[in-house]
Length: 228
Picture 1 (cartoon, rainbow, N blue to C red):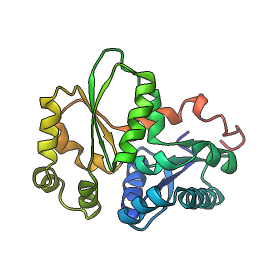
Picture 2: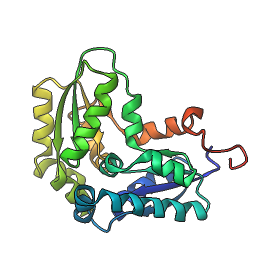
Picture 3: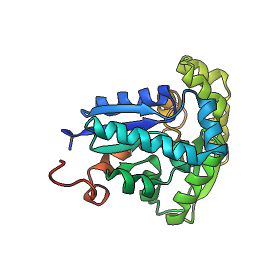
């Protein structure tokens, strides 16, 4: 499927850039767009006007479809949490994946504590709910870290963010309460993955998992053989 064009849509120009860079590095041709000019605007739309955000996203998808995109990746956890995915698929007639699909597919057999880093509480709650549906034995430890997301948007050095914005202390606290795995519940967070991994090595990164899901027929049924 690497010969198809992917549409990558995220909440802001910077996380769209991160998504485009990642999937381009995996050998895909990527078309991209974003739904808001800043994290503050994205946050406001998610909380106060999700209907407008839904329409903006659909408009972006249709624009990228006209440019040749054959599948869509919503590269933003908090955006994915407020979108009506089924409606977008129905109206665009394109397969569409989000990080939430990764959480739905997550299966953990043993009782564990899982730590979740998310941009905001709305996103964290949605992630917990999705994972718990198939893994009711899990205990969740979550945090919304919008100031850190804003620092990533500002392209502050990763090591400085990790050491000076309280994230190292937060990671340490996850370990002290017994977290077995850490889920990067925001697509900005791979920016800090190397720093986090130095202190916590069991990390779930949805960006890589989405590519595996994209290759499964069950998630590309809307893509006809002619289109491929």
